[in-house]
Image (cartoon, rainbow, N blue to C red; front, side, top):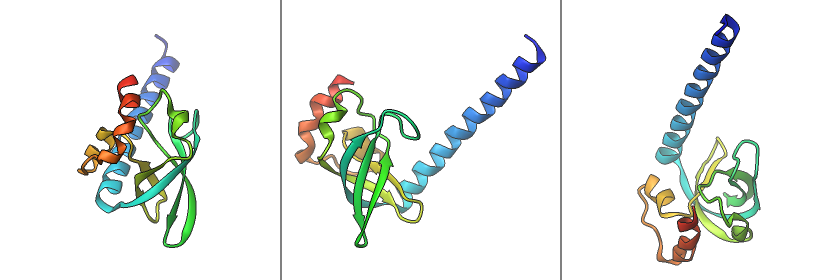
Length: 126
């Protein structure tokens, strides 16, 4: 392996580790300072910052915001368009994470509501 390849691998390794720490920090911040809001899914994101996630509309303090949200739902995600779900929102940083699956609720120590049992077939498809 030549020196340039080794340097590239090291740089990508550090970048990967940095992104993992950044995601951990953001999740922690959202968990500690986030507020629960209702988020209406308006579009499925297939690429970019939150590949596999959703574009959602929320109303916070009388202001409507359109924000991306990651999601673990892959198969059938188009069926969630126009549906409203609870979400964790971090004011000031405009971070949003829509809560759909039991695992999503578990991350924030919230009980999974019976009203979302209809999503379970989508969870089992994953």
